[in-house]
Image (cartoon, rainbow, N blue to C red; front, side, top):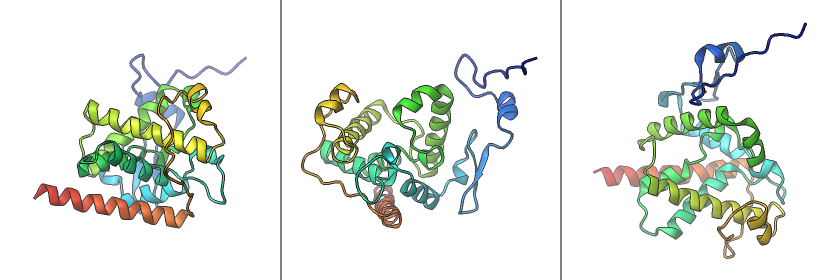
Length: 222
C-alpha cells in the first residue's frame, strides 16, 4: 500500500498553515552566528542582525555561481550595484529608499538566491517565506514593511538593469539573449565593470555601505 499523501502546506489563499508546516518541518528556525534564532515562518525583527545578513549575502552567489572569475558574484555585491543604479535613476533618492534598495534581496541570507526557473518550480510557498522575511527585515531597520508602489517599481527596475549587466558581463549571455531569453526590457550598463570580490571583501563593502545609509537616515530624522 502506498504511503498516505501529506496535505499541501498552503491554503487556497497562499498562506502558510502552521499545522501542516509542523508535519512537514518540525523545526522552522535557524541559528545564526550572532546567536539569534530566526524563525523562517514567523520571523521577528528582533532576531535579525545586519552582520548575519552581510555574511550570508557575501557567501551567497548570483546565477547559481555560474559566473566568470575566480570569485562568485555575490548577492551582497548585487545589492550594492542596485543601490548605485537607483542613484543613477533618481539622483535625489533619499536614504530610506536607498536602504530599501540595499536590502531588497536581504531575505536571501536565509533562503539563498534561487534562480528564476527554480522559483517557478517551488512556487507560492517560497514567495510567502521570502515576503515575510523581507517585511521583518525592513521593520528591523526602520523601514515600512511594504514599500509604496512607486518605490517598489523603481527598485525593481534597478534590479533588472543590474541583472542584465551581470548576465552580459559575468554569466555568458549576450545583450540579445537578455531580451529574448531572460525577458529583460532594460539594457545592461556599458560604463561599469563588474569585478567579483572575495567573500570577506564583499561582506566589508556591504557593511560599510549599510552603516553609511544608517547614519544618513539618522541625520534625516533629526
